[in-house]
Length: 363
Image (cartoon, rainbow, N blue to C red; front, side, top):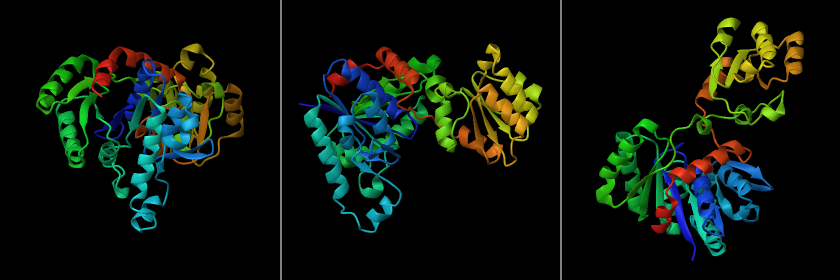
């Protein structure tokens, strides 16, 4: 018989996929066959000839599950699909039947199955299959991932519990993630007090980590839709700081943070040349991850030659620097299959902080 667990969250960006990666790793230490499914896929990519949710594709690539890829993302919301459903072009039973068929087939092939929800609890309501509906449909005990804190976490959990209760889903775990290390034990103690009467286990996951939270150069390239130029070997480098190069060149360089992605206007020849030259000095290479060169004005020929010769990683974004700065500041990093540094770190931390044995015993 296949054990299963549904990974939900109180909101977006709580870390569901990080928890799914962790549980895939931890379950794999006990069970010979561990499967994964993201029943509803709102963010899709093309993966080996299939249209799949990006998280399902990432899990398939990391854990060599390509043979089950067709089952791992059974229902995708591509542009226009919600209108087709509301206009009656899609049978009301199709989402339910499609999801249930894939989950049942994966149950028959695995000893442990991780079912990951999409976004916050209400995502999928437009097709009648939000997270709570899917958890109830698949009869999978729910692990609800939250952020760190006390009051805000309690409020968010209570709001989400109402939806799960309405569908008859079984919420057994609350997992607090992205905790502030100094407040970790105090936060968990109060959360356990708050939910003791509901018979829900409160457990913990990761402390907040810039390495996990910050984007790689490749992620930035994908986000802005611009190819990364320069040294391609640096595409996995993590950008811990995003800095707008609006001050004088000397002041910008003096205030570089750790592994900085520098956003520079295309007309700032002096700053572009200075950053390119400093990139070869080890002290500054640690500080300069790369550049986004923004603006409508073409980069001068001589500056372009210096850029290309230096091999400093850069992207040429032909919109304003303030626009790309805002876009990147609002971005929350997603983990990709090539992020081996992050994935290995996740797995090693998971072994220390996630109590898989207790979770497993309660399924």
